[in-house]
Image 1: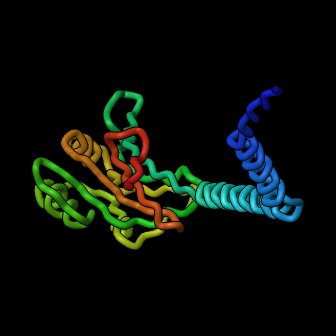
Image 2: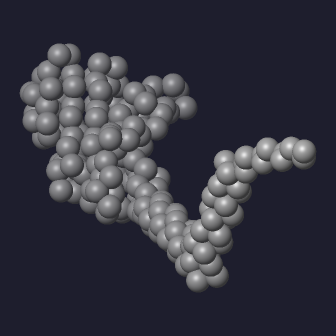
Image 3: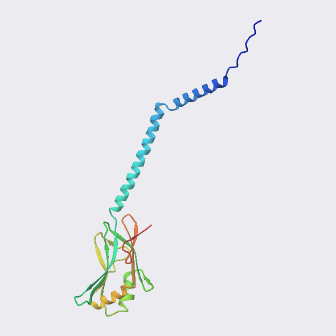
Length: 201
């Protein structure tokens, strides 16, 4: 009598896993067709182009701002005769930049007093205390004054040696601050106690 061998169970799990893997692979192939790939590349190129244009515009703006940059300096000058006596004394303002400087504010700080215009400082600290001295005073240097590039003006200048000695003494306790801006409305502060303007953020 012959015995029938028992049939082995079919490994359905392996077949199902293989079928699922094949289906996922087909789905990926269907998703990344040539049309979608070209669209993705076009998006990347557009983003790169936009970044390049934005960066170039940023550089152009920086170049434009730099091309009209004002640079104010406040200087103090004294001149002496051959015999050593003081002959001349003056305070100058000069625009050493390549663009015009628009004066926004002036400050004259002297012995604890603050003056917002040159005329008041001159009357109270030079003219009244020293009536026998003579000066040339440029009262135009105030809010609204435009100082062209490459030009300078005396703020206060002595007209004789006696006035020069007085102005020299006054200058030791005097601080001048001038706030100015460029044509792009960027602002700086120039001061006679600093060797370069400070940008105001």
